[in-house]
Amino acid sequence: MFSVFGVREGLVFSLLSNLERERDPLIAFCEDHARLNSRSIDHARELCAWTDALFEGPGPRETPEDARLRHAACLISDIGWRSHPDYRGEQSLNVIAHAALGGIDHEGRIFLALTVYFRHVGTGRISGVEDELPVALKSLVSRRTLKRARILGAAIRTAHMLSIGMPRIIDETPLHYENGKLVLTLPASHRDLDGERLRRRFDVLAELVDQKAEIRYAP
Image (cartoon, rainbow, N blue to C red; front, side, top):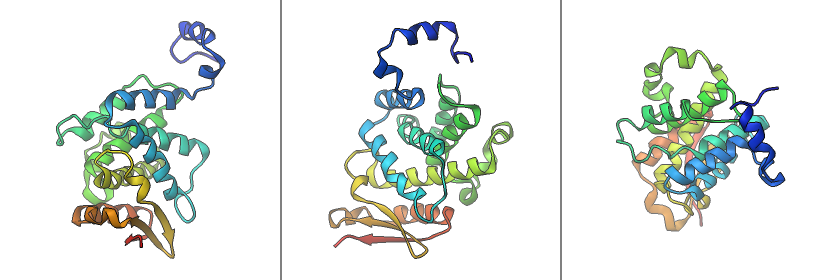
């Protein structure tokens, strides 16, 4: 067994407290990166919980490792917000694909990069943007991983239409499955957030998980 960053990392690791040693290296990196480069680390953490509902009940199945990678992707999903809108997807993909991530394999790294790419530019099946991805990049991931990246990218894209990256909004707009529908519930105080762009993005998300889209208002 070898240290991913070389012998010196083992020496540094031996000097850490037990609590620090137990931290997940991938999640710790993504949280630090989000704290430095995202609009809100709190919002990034809310995304982790908000997207949990997509992978429950009739939603796509995921393993504990899948959930870990999904949470990592949510944490770094807003790191490109300062870039020009026309280039956020490509630039975020390049940053994540070449970041000094630990605790992750090549396919997992590409999943994170593709998720954030789709979060900015839309999903391949709907918009055709998948054709613009390098063949070498797509060849390193399974079809299942690519689909999960598209689903999660569409979910984060929908969430940002509600929150614009700010906390304490999406935690009041839960998702759930019901009789073949993916339901998004908005409280009365958030009715003005409903509009054509939100519905368009939510329709894409619902289609990717093979459900009908429905937006409801809480009583």
